[in-house]
Length: 196
Image 1 (cartoon, rainbow, N blue to C red):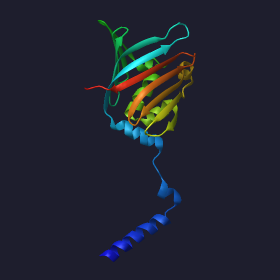
Image 2 (cartoon, rainbow, N blue to C red):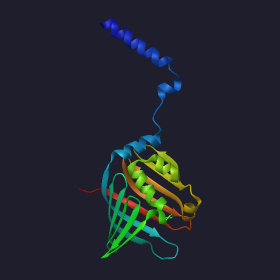
Image 3 (cartoon, rainbow, N blue to C red):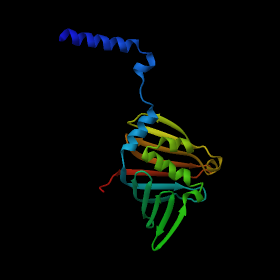
Image 4 (cartoon, rainbow, N blue to C red):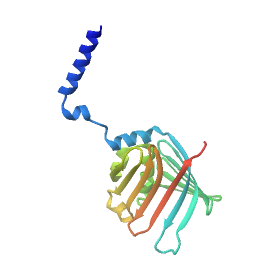
């Protein structure tokens, strides 16, 4: 019995040594690994603060509230300050509610907005193909601390947004920064997970 176990171990070692060098040491693509980890989370509910810096204003615009995500494509941004407002993106439709008034628009009608919203939705859902369809994707860091730099592929979108930078830790998105082509920028910082 012991001799059979030793022969099996030796045979396994020989197979490993005989395998091509890339096969024995192949590791998963870091972007695939990150997307898989993000895709495992089916929902999220966090606080946020957002700071927008616009060239035409002397001071930045600040807002805060809660951000909710439900896989695969529902995002809800509940702005509490400075004025209550709710933005919902679901199934390609964006609705904005302030007070008793709600406006609704197909996301396709706003080509400059689509990349911004899709960058967040596709990242949260771990949808690599959607990210790479719309952006050139650059990943730095590792699964523990990562940064995704997204550059729009579409020239029309690139005229509005030069880059989207997402940072996170493991399967948790911590911030989303939007660098607009005209020099304006916004930084959305996400807080810890809230109870459902």
